[in-house]
Image (cartoon, rainbow, N blue to C red; front, side):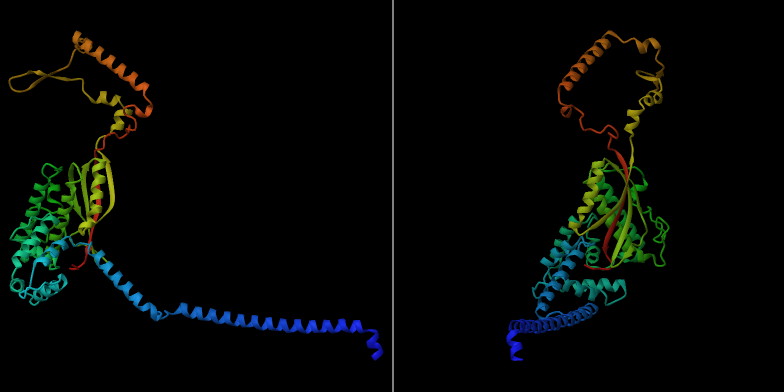
Length: 434
């Protein structure tokens, strides 16, 4: 044995080294396998945890709770400010009132607290007469009520087209605070409101915008109003007085549209149409639909749409859904069919100088010699005009084409006078919401 070892010492050393290496590789492989198996198990656990978290709403981390609360308050404040744009045009007038009014103790009061107290006093009774008495009693809590109402009126006159007087200022103030404007439940009051609005709008548009039809001057409401339940379009209600606040709101919206139209430069109104008395309910908002016919240039129509879009700065939201345009003058026919101008005009001239005593003008057909033989003065004038035209043409040819007169002007549709029908919606919050 010893002899075998001595004779094969190198072989035994090599076999021993290989054996040690093999054992080391086996151990290393086993360790890697166990580590990989552990990773696989952890990956499976993480997938299960992620799936469980996806299926449920995890609780926020404790450190993030103050940040989430701050974000919530910021979003709520921004949402309230955004909602003010939907149908609260007298908000600035109410703020002017609150900035002046003081309690009997000389203290200030916030608009929300004032509104809450007033509505609580107003809703104590179901009788309209008693409500008015409660309103008068509520005023005694504020010694400088008259001065505050004066501030409200000054600001409100800038925000609404309705003529404000001592007779209607309290109704306008109450309406701005969310109290329905029922006009005492009397048809005469409603008719007076409509007449005041209509007369004010006709006076406002005088010299600025014309009306192409008598119907347009009624702004989609029949006049005179025979009965509250027989509005234009056939709408009716079991309780006609329930429509009074909505009718008053219609006139307030239409008057604002007309007031803004006076700054657009349009020529005339042709019609006013509304979809119905009651607005469409969309979520927490009321949507009033109107279709307004008018005439004007393309520029003035675009300007009107822009003015309506910018009304959001006054807490009014208008949505222009569509615009239909119709040409009133077809200049393309003049360009492409010049012979139509000749055939359309009768060969009859009216001799203005030959007027009979009765005021009738002597129309006669020109003879062939009169129409074809110009006088000496006419020939000289024609020759001078021809020379001037030739000189102008020569000067035009010497200029670059982009400097020549008429470059860039439309050839087809040169006239911008159009008749347009604009479908517009007015969006406001349902209920009071002020």
